[in-house]
Length: 227
Image 1: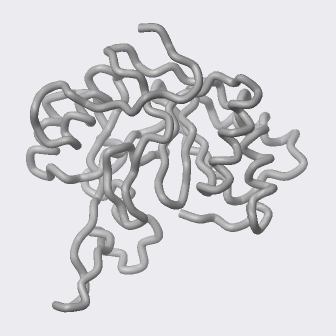
Image 2: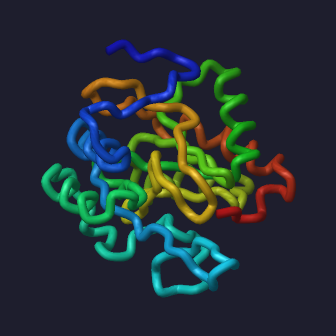
């Protein structure tokens, strides 16, 4: 299927009827060969009349509630559709976690305000972008796999790299839509096109300058790490 540049229409997973998280996870693992696993998810906390939703992990001060692996751990991520079905049959509302790096996509994330600025700048340059994941606090651009050595060489020449930028490479993870975490709903800002082929991804060096610039010019100079 031909790639359509610019803004994409929203992707709806319609393999067959079933829980939306399961069908999205099967698309990632089966069609795109992206290794996934269920995230820890959320649980009700507080007393009756004062209910809240916190992370289901044992850490009461978890900074990424619901948006990280716990059991199983990140090394269990797989493209095996039978395993994916079993996981989400037992936990149908679990967030979808992508294990980044290796042959899977990597990502660069930044605060939402800076992310919107970066996409505007990249669109203005006519840059071809891959999928973009958005939460209420952060946006993540999916990029082609890179190594820590490649990333280090790329960042070494920069005068300043804002601490609000996060790099999701080998051994890392990223929550994918449609998931619900402690910061809210996870959605596609730029959705992959429907079809069996894995989404196209840009190289990290093609987008990193715009991400650094957008983060630096954001309120606070990009020094705050907003999860």
